[in-house]
Length: 375
Image 1 (cartoon, helix red, strand yellow):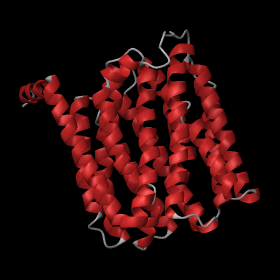
Image 2 (cartoon, one colour; image 1 turned 90 degrees about the horizontal axis):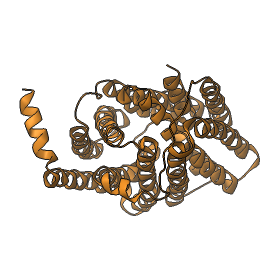
Image 3 (cartoon, one colour; image 1 turned 180 degrees about the horizontal axis):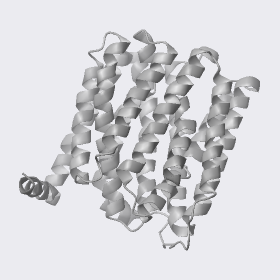
Image 4 (tube, one colour; image 1 turned 180 degrees about the vertical axis):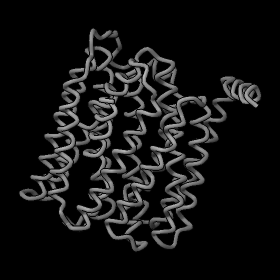
């Protein structure tokens, strides 16, 4: 249970503050929506670089050093974020936010590969990450409701350092180190359908998420309810991920893409913040299928497990760069619901492209035969 505890606690500390960052930027520093998008893009850009670099480094140099270094630096950067709220201005807050993005991208691939090497269940392990995200959103929503932003970040730093302490006790044994090129073009080409599906869907999703707390606030939600709404998604993911270790990964990805389009469409129908809650449950199902399906697809089919999962994280980070920037601009020009319509269309396009690729590769026929064999 030690890897699961690390996954839980690190996600509490690193992703709990996502419900507060847009509000802090707007209310404390007077940032505009497009600037909020740029900050989120900077956070993701840093995560893109570190996920790619340290995912490969975990396969080449070993998991332990990468995991421990990433967790320790993440805790330290989170302490600096609390300091920036008291002693710095907008520039320092943004700089530390980007630093956290870099640190947060260092260790997940190493931890995921460690679990896969130990024949752990990826869906069940991923559920602990969603649980941590949900707990973090809920707790940080309470801190935000009381305007205790600095104290909230200190709490996050504490739980990250707790995950680091647990990581120090992990048994690694003799690690197998692989020779992976700095730019693994063959691996990228081999797994391109999954990376492309994630890129398109997640870019649209991040167009929504960059101003989602502001959208919920516009629907009348106070900070504590924003945290609750986020946690419905996260805890829903926990439930669904527990059942996703057996279905075919390609099927999970297709279901995740199609249900993402449906979910985003339902956001446009909400007239009050409480009406968004059922959509959060559908969103949890969509992302659980998409994320676990993508992870299992790349890790089951490649020996370079940390590298391919790191590239997947980097793909998500690219979406986290372009999505928030486009989303901030779209929210300013088209409003919140106009942005959501764009994201809906992008998920639908990703779904159709993925189905076409499955048909061209023969994977679609295999899935049909397998589904008939189980009926």
